[in-house]
Length: 216
Image (cartoon, rainbow, N blue to C red):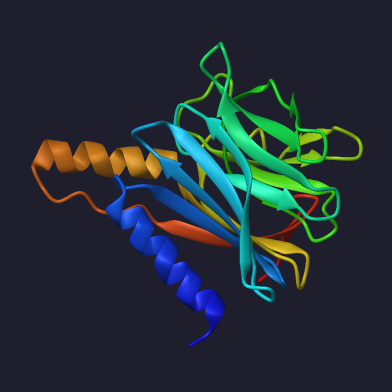
């Protein structure tokens, strides 16, 4: 059995046994990056697991209000994650693991989650809520070289991003979204008629890293 697979089984078992810890895994060619969140202590810990040397180490432990998404840059040994600030919003942070210095990168969002990094390790992709919105999720990027934020299709107040995934092989993203208006209509109809709530109709779209939609 593959050693990395055995390691994942162990991690899953630990998460099940110890207080329903929540975890996520980011894969790279030679390493796994694992985030384990303990809802009792409100601590998350990022681990690096070397699949070749069969060794693991802790990168960072930090208290947070809730589970956080993350991305790791092997090139500059920096960790990118979402965390809450004093105004009760969730923003993007950077932690330099060489110097242990932490820096807040964004202030403009209501919420940041689903963080991924591009293959050049220059662009952060994330799902965000804008300051004046509570349901309409957008895709956004943070350019690590220019510190520029780009919100994709910001003017669209109906489409809401459910999830996305970045493909480093073709440098594109698959984005799953749905209509908030249609979803609310189905909710209202289910309440009115006392019928089963129907799931929203999802759209599957491909974008380049600049936010331009591609033809499927």
